[in-house]
Image (cartoon, rainbow, N blue to C red):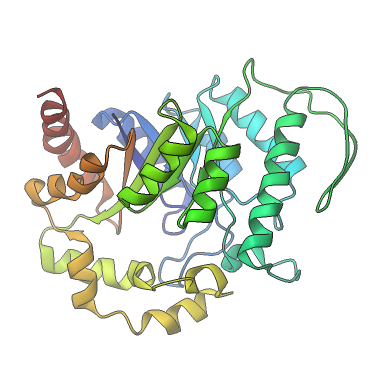
Length: 321
């Protein structure tokens, strides 16, 4: 099992993200996730730097592997551009880069004015996009006339020695089945044992499975709950709303239904290392290969220090036992 840190581009400035990457490596984390957003989930989060610029900066301050969690290579970003950006990222990271992909959310992907497709169409678009990205990574000149994408005599010249792995997020059976068929691994933010087993049954045990979870460190559980609710109450929005709402303001309206008590019940809050250790339990029991943890709020340096001194060593001790 590999323990990683999740960089939230929705919440932190470029300088803070670079600092977190450096501190995460110093604390003993083994890998990084980084989100790919055009908008934050709400205005209180207040950031959204371009992920490809951030990966370039991070490559200069730490040596950890980086995975996008996740990029949508279908509407806002054409797969030919994503293929080039990912290849350059892999070169900068000496091959320690993986492209995490997903069908995306209207929040980020609607901005160019195209109609936001239904889920089944988005899966078809993603499957064609992944095929095209892999073809471009061969270094050959590519002309492609597909159902959703056209590429004319395109060739990527800056390539890593080995093409990056592609991992795919999935939150329902159809997406998990596509991930098992087209991807090198599976990404989720839920310790859903049924979906994990479904992926492994179709894909086999040799494909990586990764999960992410958010916590909120502060001097007290009460302070942390207030921070988590202010910044990430949008995580409590149920069902498919998170895929179809088009703006941070719509998310703010929907998250008005999420109470602070609901946030307290779903997020590990405060400075207690034991509580943070319990956060990992369902993911460990499910058997994920990699688990990534993100901090909510301004106290990330203290959180990373506590994880380095207490949480990560204990998790590794339990794993060894």
